[in-house]
Length: 462
Image 1 (tube, rainbow, N blue to C red):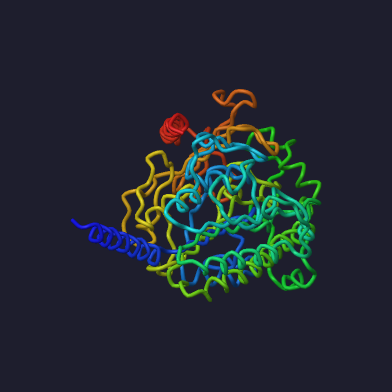
Image 2 (image 1 turned 90 degrees about the vertical axis):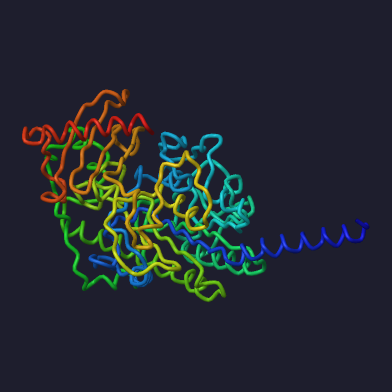
């Protein structure tokens, strides 16, 4: 074959390959993953809850799928984020405590996996791992580490620290919009990981909300939790009476109803301010030409006790700590409520299913795509497994199993996670606030044995 024919053939094949690759990029969906901080499952306005003023979240609820029973694998900052990023439990990915902790070598994040498929990847907001975001697949990174003030915060941009003026959530929205605008300079799809700081307390243990936002709650009905004050914590581990969860709550004045109600309003007001800034970012998403091919996923890294059992904080395996909101919007998703038991580790396999990419066998999460398409799923869970093997924020090591009706909790020795020091069983249908421990009721002996056996299998598996 003459040389010029070979050149022509090569150029033709190259053009076809480029056109095919470009067509794939053009049809690939975009993803916006929002991970708020310390927002419990019932702290929003949509569906059956009417606690916080959240018009942005209510709009997502109205047009998307709301998962009523969403949980995290470990309810504290770093482990929850590591689990979301990798689709794997902390005992496997190496992050079981908060702070500057590295993922284990060889872990792959959703940013790395999507970047390998040609995605532009961006991180904006809170970061809570020792690994640099760029090393985990984020090309665009505008972030801050851990907790801090809500105003004039130290942020990291292109590896350099700066002081950003003003409200941190306005900064997050601004930098997210910057990433979204940059994404339009190329045909490649984008992934934005958007991590608000709010409603997490600031570094002075305060919800530093404006008076104007707080005033919106003046006439809003707020009640003390059904489990308040639970003064003696009957049926719960004895250490919790003198532990940080109770003592910190007392230092905030949560034993006084008026103080607790005022603090509760401040917590909800913080969510309102987060919701408003997030709305700025989502308005830009909807302005872009490919808005109708964009999935928006909203979740929280963990819940938060605000007077429940006269506690504050998180980590413990009770509902207000481990249960979080989850809303997913996107192409082909109809508005509705799903009752399946789902976890934060399910997000990564869902992304891969959406882009029709083979899922690594080492993932612990399950895809939610069939649920989003409102079809029956063969991967529906019978239970969720919760693990908190490292003492932190005043907790003992613990693990839990939660079915659609029951919750079984094992608390272990501070120094030996094979030595059970306390057990709890709750019937969430008759006792949704987990006030009556049934572990010593002989009528439940067979159930307890089944749940204990299943929990041990889960511990060994993960």
